Image (cartoon, rainbow, N blue to C red):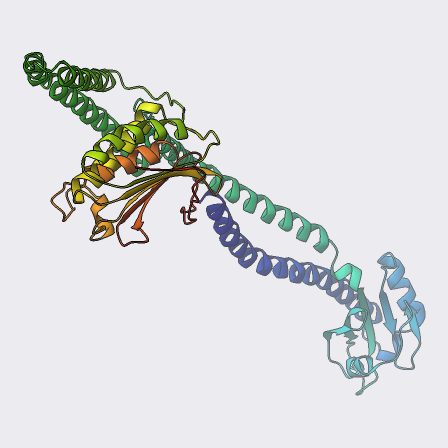
Length: 449
């Protein structure tokens, strides 16, 4: 915007300056020529009058070369001044016979332009008046250099003035543009920082009134976002804390089970749930932006064994294919485990017992990738990933959680169909990439259950 404003100002100022200076330059040139011709006419008329007075009441023949020389000497023999007699004799500057000279001998005084300048022709009128074509003519010649004397300097001064005015206009426009662009640039940078999670970002409202109002609105928005997020964190922490009461009751009931193996398994699950709730409360009260890391292959192998026990109980065939190469991802093992558990809950919750599933982990397009697919009815549409839009008796929250975990690790989630028509979820983790995972992963090792 700043550059565009400067260009527009440059164009407009240039047009105005040209429209003003071109006519002024022509006027200066014409005035210089008129000044030179006026001076020549004045000398010519003075010499002609002196010749007429010096001849007295005599005839035109009394105006002779000796008298003409005396008059020119009295005037200091000005350059370019000539006295031409009817017989062609000339006193002063040499004159070439011409049609203009013949016309002036007839008694007509006039000024005309020539190839090399301009000449002023004035006939000398005496008392008895000459017959037609016999008048003595005073000719004052003005060269081209004299006609344009001072014009070049005047044009240079006008040009410099024009450049100065254009420069002042452009500088003023640039400063105006900077006063408008700088607060907008600061506002844009602050918006990016706010979008990156820096909730303490604020701007100093500056610039024109309208832009300053935008700055105030931005600060109000940032304050409001901070308040809403703080309220949301408190709500999550409060809700998580309320879950401790039923968990305590559940622990007490589990401790009354006579079968020690079942009691131990339930207590272990309750302890894991309590740790998850404590972690949720801590993160809600003191959010952290530190990113962890873990090995995708190791976590997938561990969680696959956990879900394999339930698969055996439901007579499901589980195919596990995990690349032996370590696949380090940008999230911790707990987040990866939550991602896998969410996907497996969808498989067990939305397919009938006995339906097979497959878990594949490997590298696709250079990124660690996890694929979970089943032989069930599949997804009704890709809209199931949005919260509250699932048409299969689900809130859609699970897939939304998976998508958010993938995005936090610089990856993405893609929904599709398996080879047998079931649901297929592909989760790519690692550095951000705009390329969707489309390649079919081949198992490095396979375990059937």
